[in-house]
Length: 455
Image (tube, rainbow, N blue to C red; front, top):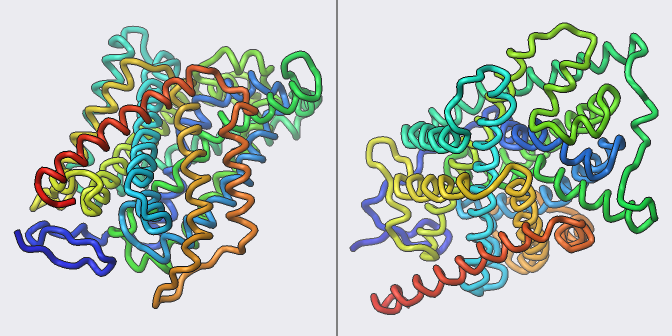
């Protein structure tokens, strides 16, 4: 089989077509915003409130800072190495340890799938219940939902990204409704401002307060994940070294600001216990607001929002498969591209089947927390990698983050991933099982490569 050099040392089959560069600067900004917005803010806000109380805005503010720190590292790395494999590529270039590279890649893939699965379950929850009382069983709805998104993904990146733009605008309109309700409440004197400084954590001690805030931040960080997925679109983006810095920083800044404002409005209008008990917390805010906005319409908007999250995560996981296949971390077949559509067909089918498995065994909060935990571990490695790779200059200009940012990014990611964050033991167990599965797959792939004489 003949091969061609991609320019970064990667060899890929010559007959496989390259991915199409269809994403421009504006489309990428909307893509990043749409990737971050969605399930986290629409479905898990109440669970975050349950950990911290009425001071719901604080975990989102801290999460915003942590996201900016790590986003700076991703921007530097995607500018240096504009390839589809993302964190796996950076880990391999920095540490040159195939085992670590595979585990990081596997964790990233699993985080995307657990996020998509959480979105699928959120789709089948209270927001859908507001629209119909005669729905199919939630798990079946979630499975059908995943399969429909896989079909859209197979049609092509342009179709998927354009669908993302439409869904992003819809979900932004839903959050705009929340902010309008908050503005009206503030002007009319409604709500309880005292809730905004009300901390409810454990036995009220300083340690309980600290772990409660860290736990809420760790879970709330699920709402910020997504910007790291966009780097896997590097091979489908026009001039990625110039396009990505602006897109990622604008995307994180816009979503972080919206999240803090939405959290303020939620606590102002609804008691944290009511938020905690609902799988559609923002619908509770709409019901409590002074503006007579149709509840069913807002529920429909929320469904579009979680659809967007799932679509992007399925898309990104499949691109990660494609990138890893080209780096020979996964078998070559995972990089197979449809000749006409030029989409990674095997990767799409593979990740969709894994997502179907996850929706049958998890629930929204647990899958969301698992997503955040896995990515926090990955972020710690990426922040270290950007420092190591300063010894590997490239011959083109790219963004360079101030050294303090990746250092702080690594420290904050490790703290939020640690037991100090007071997350349930089941999250560590689930993540441990996933890593164990990854180790098993790495061993199998190593044996296959050795048998083929490719190692």
